[in-house]
Each structure stands twice: as structure tokens, then as C-alpha cells.
Image: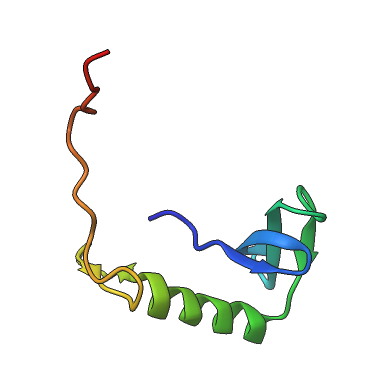
Length: 89
């Protein structure tokens, strides 16, 4: 599933979770657009958790069986044709 994209004064960003030396959690926001584009900012675990919950509530998620769980803004998965339809020129 694609990452959730959030926005603040620094621009548009995604949140990421990793670990250092398999012990210390590393949560951060990575800015993809705006004044802080390309920068990575460390955030605390509670902020990371809050943003992930917000993303799931608004845009939905995928459960452990791979089924889409709808969100408020995306109540169902949009249908995308297998082959793009191009208008006659």
C-alpha cells in the first residue's frame, strides 16, 4: 500500500518507521514537497502513531488478509482500467 501523505508548514511529508541496531526505534517524517523537501525530521513514537491512525481513518488501510478497509475519504477502492483508454486524436 502506498504511504499516507500529510501536510504541515514544512510541506508535504510521509512518515516512516525503522530501527537502529535492531533495538532503538527510529520514527521520522520525510518531506517530499515544499520548503523542507528532501529533509528527514525525527518525530517521537506518539506523533508517528497518531499520524498513522489519522491516515487509516481518512484514507483507509489493508487488513492482515489483504482486504481493503475503507476510510472516510476513500470509502471504496477506485476502479482503474487494465489498459488506459486514450481518446481519438
